[in-house]
Image 1 (spheres, rainbow, N blue to C red):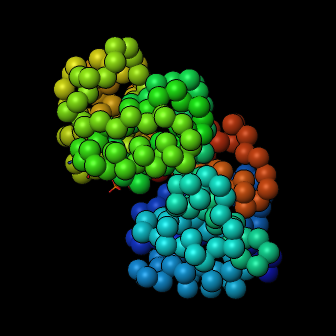
Image 2 (cartoon, rainbow, N blue to C red):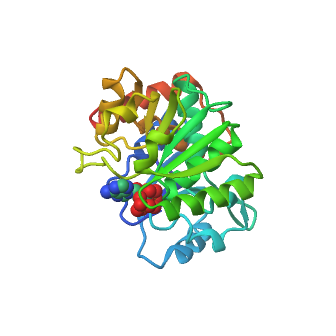
Length: 288
Ligand code: ATR
């Protein structure tokens, strides 16, 4: 591409950012749309996220992605926050508006669009959600927003499961989330469920573990969605497949959270065909 006096800049703030796949997504999209735009990583010192956001605005940056550990820290530096991001209490995308940045959370819409593209429904579904950390909490809000009928939230620490269930039920004004200990899975009702794996167990290099390893648990699952994409087949996914369930990793979620951010920054709609082309590049880069 040619960088000239009109080139717009987007980027990622976080710490660390060196292993990010986001530049590949956004620079590929810029090329496909013939947009004069570059996307670069910006490593930011811990505690300096607000200064970075302010500086980015002054530098006429068009948009930012925000990753660990700044997803909540940047909130006070924004002029506006989208409703879902507000509920979740975390943003991963900042969009330049008049006077400052508006914050969005595209992780969850990204997960949703990834699920839709695989033909996985949330509306009316009974969902098993594994984990009660930041990622699981966001998935629970997504389930509420997309009309899941019930969410069984299983976590090692039951207190954290209780707290997330209480918060999501209160904010969504539904009795949707039922907290449970991991070991209580035999108490789940009969039937087959969609299970979303939102713990950090199984993430590279801890590839030999799943948060629950008993076969009996996996007999309850028709579809398993792991938010992890490294490795591309987690132990959780293997266990789901062994019981004849369908299993997916989280790389498409990464793709779509990026695509939605790009759409917000550039006011365009990325077609499924283009999404698939970028996904091929992403898989290659991720070694999948
Ligand atoms: P994230 O922001 O990615 O969700 P997190 O907030 O640190 O990360 O949450 C990690 C999740 O993985 C939690 O649900 C955690 O369970 P606890 O709440 O009981 O800590 C879960 N987790 C991490 N290591 C685990 C392990 N060895 N066994 C079971 N659950 C584990």
